[in-house]
Image (tube, rainbow, N blue to C red; front, side, top):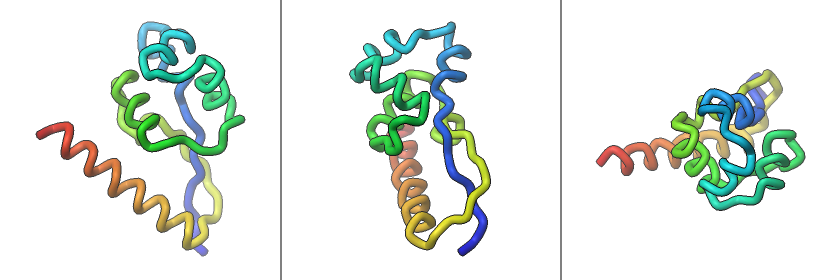
Length: 99
């Protein structure tokens, strides 16, 4: 295993940078409930759909890298493969969006 990072969502900080957008406003714009936004911000939800990441990034005018705050932890081979797959997927979305 190698040292890598785990992620925490920075939705709250990005909302504040985006004209102090409320959880309810963000939820309405991306089609989620306010409770879901709250649970994502607090870390109560441990997973997030790639489509939700894309919607959050579009609405908050940020990149996936901006959306996550990283902290150190050991990464297993499975987690490493999942991270690489996510990076490939997000890269393909950015390419599609710019064409």
